[in-house]
Image 1: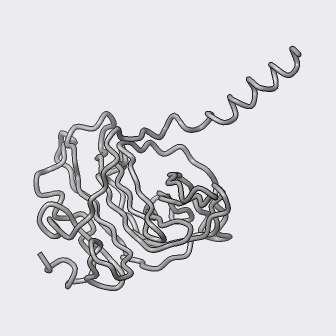
Image 2 (image 1 turned 90 degrees about the vertical axis):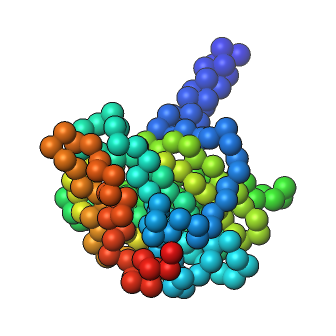
Length: 224
């Protein structure tokens, strides 16, 4: 009996280990629209200029600087919206200029069961050479998401993203088997992006949000 108890405790530890870096919002509402694109947030999508609030297929992402005083110097906190059509998952990928061999992946996924689809979230590192996915503990908070058929929507904040790096921004999808995430398929590569600029004190300048995802296509930048 004692051995069974120890085994049960060990199983519980395995289940919760590695999830402290993720914090879910008490607010479960997800409302993703084009409102604010080019003004308060920067947006990208494929097909170009598709409407994330519409009924047609649309892989969409937006991002905005939400704090100017993160706990880590030379960093920012980013609020991200993702919307896409997938029977598995949708994801935002960031490739840092200092680590071109790997991609930080932020995955919004659906675990389909007999009782329907259940939303779950993962942070992963993708090896850009062999495409292997490795769990990583990137700190993300205010996570919320919904699944309706094949439409996945989610919002989350990335904490302490290095503001001095240049990133390649990717959007993509992939398959899910239970809660196991399959290979990341790139649907959109937005190219190299200067996420923000800082002054000598490390605070984000008010206009920094206008630089976020600044190398997106001109039509996306101007539609607001």
